[in-house]
Image 1: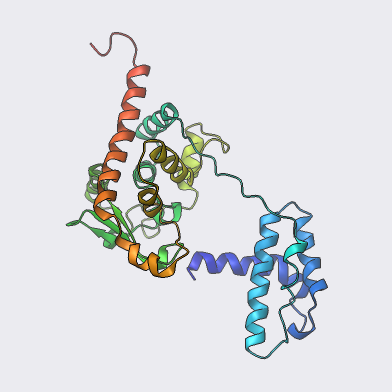
Image 2: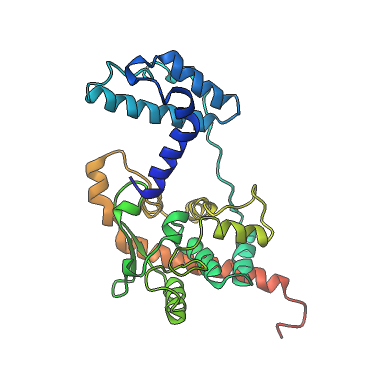
Length: 291
């Protein structure tokens, strides 16, 4: 488990589980006891949280069975008892004109310069927010022009290689010249720590993007939508998004799959974003200023 995931799991145990069944001997806990606590979470309209808490409890009970501390997992028969949670699409800008306006707004962002760089990096690489803010200098392969994210930082626990467009290399050179941190590419105001979890999100709000319009995670949906519309092969897009493969053998084999094609796609994607911003800039320029 990553440190972040471990903290999330334990906080859910402390908040939702321990107050109800934390002091009971594990062998005495019944399906009714577990159902009661997840029903309380459901009553607050936290359907996804209820489902995740049930899953965490099930892990604990299964470990208890393996250790000989209880006879069975009381969560086993409760799956159908929960209200189904329907996953909502994450807010993201997907119209080319809107995306051009976003890139233009990021370029003109007057807040913390590292946050501006992180937003552009997110747009060009469309990696997950946590992967971006915790990016380290040692992960950059300058010779191959790649960002190699180690497996322990990845959601699917496979190393992920990101071909870097020249725009990304320019961002790196600029930040390296500032000498803000020897570890973090995008350090926070305290250089010993990475950019805060809400750094990019707060910047988007400051630029006027509401929560139903764009989020830090929205850069991924933005890229996926537009790259598919532009006609790139779904396999390339999914591989670059580092989405999981249900076939584990195939997943291992494909860690570096399509690398040259992905390299071309990532440069063309960065150029495309810049072209959208330039079109938006031209449209917004007062008449006579371009002569």
